[in-house]
Length: 289
Image (tube, rainbow, N blue to C red):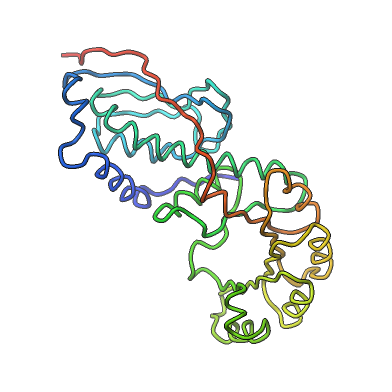
């Protein structure tokens, strides 16, 4: 799968906001006090854990917003698998700017690489089956575009980006509508011709009812492996099947083996552990005259 880079317009406002939060009212008073203005430095971003890289363009943006003279050359681009000690990128430029942008750049890079790494773990567990690993709308407020990009960098796919992508009828929608049939019929009457409809079910009788009415996809929520296997057999080619709930690195293989089309996990974006990436200085030198 080819990883399409994000357009700068999609992340620049987020990076700008993060830098302004860090710079406060007076800027980096530590670097300004200690580092001469004419100093330049060379350093590398180095992996301290095994994982998958995501977010190098965002890290570059953070450094260059501080000082456009800073250059970041990627050695392991987004989507690359890295081992401890691997150099991910080389960075060179004015030392003050490097220090000022360091934390913001690493905050984005480590978090997004953590999302990509967690996704790759599930993708690996499902390898050899038809199941695709997908994320959800359980994202960090403001970071959805970046986190969903990181899922793609880890080999996963994206579920809907927002409430306007598709109709997803969940348990509370069904409760307020009164029953599955009423909820689906109302959705069909409202949806445009290009809008997909998915319904969440947690029992096989609910699934049969949804299939009888007709939907594009069914979200099989918190079902056991045996229930998932039965649900896939019941569904056939009448709808896309999505397993959700109880998804871990340990359970993914068995769930994928049931024949579901998709496996969705909200924790990939909302609670993946950051990948430990360090910024190692190679040396300081005075700027050439």
